[in-house]
Amino acid sequence: MGAFSLGGAHPIDSQVISRMTSELIHRGPDDQGFYTSNGIALGFRRLALNDLERGNQPHFSEDRTLVSVCNGEIYNHRRLRESLTAAGHRFRTECDTEVLVHLYREHGTGLTAHLDGQFAFALHDVSAGRLLLARDHAGIVPLFYTVVDGLLLFASEIKAILRHPAVSPRVDLRGLDQILSLPGLVSPRTMFEGIKALRPGERLVADSSGVTTQRYWDLDYPTADALEPVDDGALDAELTRAAGHMTTLLDDAVRDRLVADVPVGLYLSGGLDSSLIAALAVDSRPGHAWPSYSAVFPDHDFDESPHQRLVAATLGTRHHEVPVRHGDLAARLTAMVRHAETPVRESYNVCSMMLSRAVRADGTVAVLTGEGADELFGGYPGYRYDAAGLGDGRLSGLDAELEREIRHRMWGVDLGYETDHLVAQEFRRDLYSDDLAGSFDEFTVTSQRLVDAERLRGRHLLHQRSYLDFHLRLADHLLGDHGDRMALANSVELRFPFLGRRVVDHATSLHPALMVAGGAEKAVLRRVAEGRVPGEVLARPKFGFRGQTSSHLLGGGADWFEELLSPSLVRKQGYFDPDTVAALVRHQRDQGAQVHAHLDTDYLMVIATFALFVEEFGLPCLG
Image 1 (tube, one colour):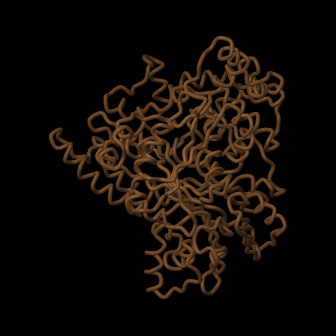
Image 2 (cartoon, rainbow, N blue to C red; image 1 turned 60 degrees about the vertical axis):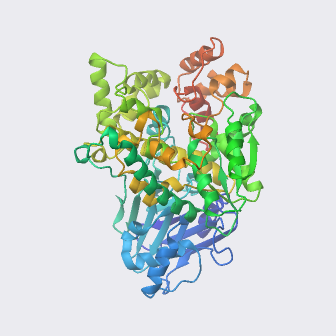
Image 3 (cartoon, rainbow, N blue to C red; image 1 turned 30 degrees about the vertical axis):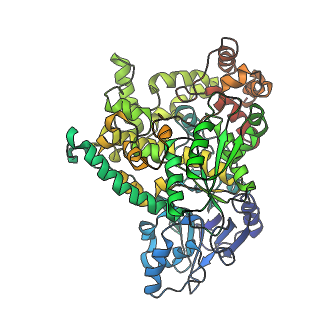
């Protein structure tokens, strides 16, 4: 994290920078480092994974005119190091992130084209008076920024930015409406007005002329008219060919992500994706007993422990089960919201935080997991519905036309995503307090352009859905509040082989007919997994990771949860209508209406966690 003066070389209070850095100690408990000069201050907290003795940051170029700090990993650093050494560069450490200053010397801001990793970095070019910020292509590692009083402030978590005395936190209503409408926030939006998230595959350049941002990478699917038809008789051969190439790429991605000078482990959910990654890890190092970890739910019907145990036994991992029980949500929900820095629609972030706590207690520091497969290879039911021509929604007549207009405003094409937004926005208008309902049209998600429409227009329907899932579900939600935040709350780094740069780029070249070939989700990955993953797991349909819903809590008499929804608290905070919230509570508690963890929006979970969010961050109450 750090601060950069946009108005010339003005001194920056080093004590403020130290306080900001201390907010990130959970992300880096092993060491800290600082760099200060006229108009620039960088702070760093280290989670030591490579070159434990010498790898602390900042890193400098040989002449010390370039300085960088980086949160994350550069997985192709050894290959980069070889070419840079041949070009005359000299390295001080074996740390992967040291390549950044040397790459910048060779390629300037274009260095991002050469990186395969998960990272958020800041690099200061002293001679040019320039600061470069960049976030990895998939958005695995977060990076937030704001401009206040002539200073660019930036950090891996917003709570560090909030420690600066010039920053006054306020709720971003557009962010709140995103949470109520989509799987989670979508960069550059955050829950804090005026504080932005750098988008996946984006870099920021700041100098005396101001701040500019540029997308250096994005998913790039071929246009539909460029796709050659795949004959049904040739489909199986194409599937085998694609699986063979993907196996090679995944093998390399897994091997790269197993490299560390600390213990590395595996998450096992009981599904295809994590099981395949674990199988490839075991194959890469025969005889090594990898530690594996699973969340289990002994009090619930959605427990997946039999499949998790089967995979662990088949692969020979040293398996650990982390039980999640009824009382755990009450004990940990506030801490979860503080780490996530957002309200949430599902409680399963608590399960993820408990899982990472057990990982760290076992001495493991990095964990491989399977996120990214569903979004890139056709893993959600929507892909099968689209392939079968069943994805047009339930509206007709004028309502259908208005829904199409909303979709074109949001992402530029007529594709149904998550819900019928016409109906949902009218419900949300009633859900907000009277004051906010009056200005609803100014902040509703249906007026926001959320993605680059040019990357969607003219593409195949399944590729369009993949693009939306990648940006609206994966980057800031599954990798962000659910992934990075819940793992690093306990100083654990998650690693994602399915999001390796070469894996992602090749996935975009696969014909959409291969995504759900034969009506099977993720057909290419299922072919890769044959003979590696137990047949019982291979045959399972998609089963999403989930936790308790508001229906579970209200039906179970969770007084603490109902208090977060009480008319007095809702009225005091002033963002939602207390009568509408009370009606929702009665509907679920007294009439037995159940929220489905995957098919419904759990509005009461959002409202309850928003109440905690307002209290935890001292945000203004409107009541």
